Amino acid sequence: MTTFTHEQIQLLLEENNQHECEGIGKDNICVKIEAIAELPTRFGDFHIVAFSNKFDDKEHVAILKGEVFEADDIQVRLHSECLTGDVMGSLRCDCRDQLEAALKTIGQLDKGIVLYLRQEGRGIGLTNKIRAYSLQDQGLDTVEANLALGFRDDERDYAIAAHMLQSLKVQSIRLMTNNPKKLDQLTQYGVKINGRVPHFLPSNEHNRSYLETKVAKSGHMIDFRSHE
Image 1 (cartoon, rainbow, N blue to C red):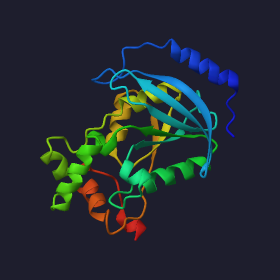
Image 2 (image 1 turned 180 degrees about the vertical axis):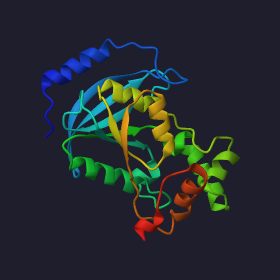
Image 3 (image 1 turned 90 degrees about the vertical axis):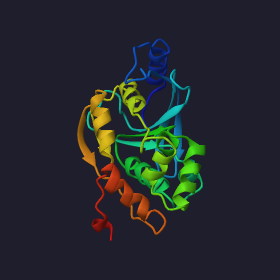
């Protein structure tokens, strides 16, 4: 298992119980660590950290490998919740593949973090994501579907992720991502990023268009040629 002592865990919980701040981002997001436990998985042995926040009462978790506190250049993956992909194995996206690959990669490292963020459907929620799927079935791409429902192409905000990293006392990270918005927002919120680790899995016939739209309209840094 990872090497956090009971004393370290209790100290973190006590510090967070007293934590108050002005928050981060336009919504003044402030999070607190509520609970920490061991999490053995098929991808390796981790600790899982539960966070609360006062903005929308959603609970988020950090999955930790090794001694990340006060550490530099920690490899980090931000993963937004996707019920259809993560749980049901939907082929319309690559979310489950990305989550499992991140856990496997970090499980093999000495130190690393996966932040699992409750931002379903790029932040529009589960029901609206299904509505967007229905519009995609009629020929719209993912960006067009979100816009047709009155949302931006991506409603996610990573202030929560930034505060979670601060609460874990991480000094600097190497971010596993293809999404430039994650890099830009975390930097804006004060996270020191010392490098990007590409994170792309082979496409399938159901999600190829979805991934191509990410590149064409959202600026994602994906090189399909390297996986063909």
